[in-house]
Amino acid sequence: MSSNDNNQGIPNKKQKHDEEFFPTVGEQAEQVEYINADDLRTTGAEDSTGRPVREMDSLCMNCHENGVTRLLMTKIPNFKEVILTSFDCPHCGFRNSEIQSATEIQELGHEIKYLIENMSELGLQVVKSNYASVSFPDLDIEIPAGPGRVTTIDGLLGGMRDDMTRDQPVRKHIDPDLYEKIEAVIAKLNDALDGKKFPLRMVLNDPAGNSFLAHDSNDSSEKFSERTYTRNATQNRQIGLAVNEDDEHRNKSLAPVIATTEDALNHGGEFDENVPSDLREEVQTFNGSCPSCQEEVPTHMKIVNIPHFKDVIIMSTVCAKCGYKSNEVKTGGSVPDKGRRVKLEVVEREDLTRDILKSETCTLKFPELNLDLTQGTLGGRFTTIEGLLRQVYEQLETRVLQTEPGQMSKDEENRWAAFLARLQSAIDGEVLPFNIDMEDPLAASYIQNVYAPDPDPNMIVEDYERTHEENEELGLNHMKV
Image (cartoon, rainbow, N blue to C red; front, side, top):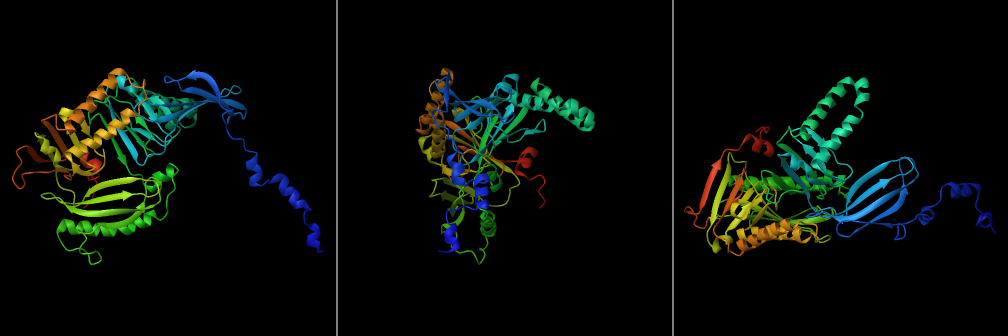
């Protein structure tokens, strides 16, 4: 028997040392205690819908003694399910509370803009997820992404003021210049809380799509607007989604093809020799990454000519892995000198079958239906008037139906029911006539003229000069050409 055989099963001193101080991953995993039903205790408290408040022992990160964490899984009206957590340590007095989304990260990020005009609106409820930032452009102040909160607008402003005020006595002696600058910011926050800064703009940006602002459903598009957007790679990393490092290379390799295509469309010339001559007839396919699961997914692209308007690019993406679907319409061409307004009076049932192209920069208003679609709502769409109204109806109906009984006041329920009923009547052609007001600063939207090339007696088309603010939002003011 060899010496190696004699030593089998007899650990040496180094092995004993490693086993004592460096246990294996399996041994450590066996010692992990999982939270089960016995670890969560019912406190007896409930929310308005009867959901119980539970509690469990957890480690205090301040004094490292055991404290108590209370959990409430609830649903915010017209929004989503959330988990409210509250920690309290009886040993050192440390307290903390935050909100976490109980729903999955949404396929698209979203941005909410709101114009605060009176003191009562400072009390509107705000749900800020862990990934959301809140800015007040008129105050030149931004709250970066941080712990989730359920609060109000004045709660956000007051929280910023309190955080800045806390260390001011120390700053006054250590850094007088910084002290004075922060005092100026605190003064602006106090003026805003006292109602001296109205109107005050607020922007809530959440790449995870899980934030919310309570508002009146009758607010105009100038007062409240919400748009969705596709996250970029940086935002996907921010919210913890896997990012394929080859994405940028794929996107860069596609850009010359799209640029060549658009250039040919704009100038009526021949396509580049590397681009198929029958590009207009064929469906082109290129690979990108799914904004939901980040897996490689094919996107199909087709150039379609809209008579008496221009060529547009229709893009369709379907992810076989997670089921994500997207249909977008992109208009090519240079930026026109003027924006365009189109007003159509829908006077008969057949008018609902007219084609409508809504770009991402388009605003649509239906005054008789009390419906405003702001820029970015629904993204780019090429459909019919009836199809567009039906998409709006389905989205709003889904949001209302997700609300549990008792979480919406009776008046609010009646308002939503009346609004949806009137919208359905418009889809069915029972609410006639009604007007459609379309405005697009890039003149990239369109409503079909059924009398073309002759003028449409029920349609008014006019070009207008863009405002400085519109050019600023489009990034045109500082563009060098």
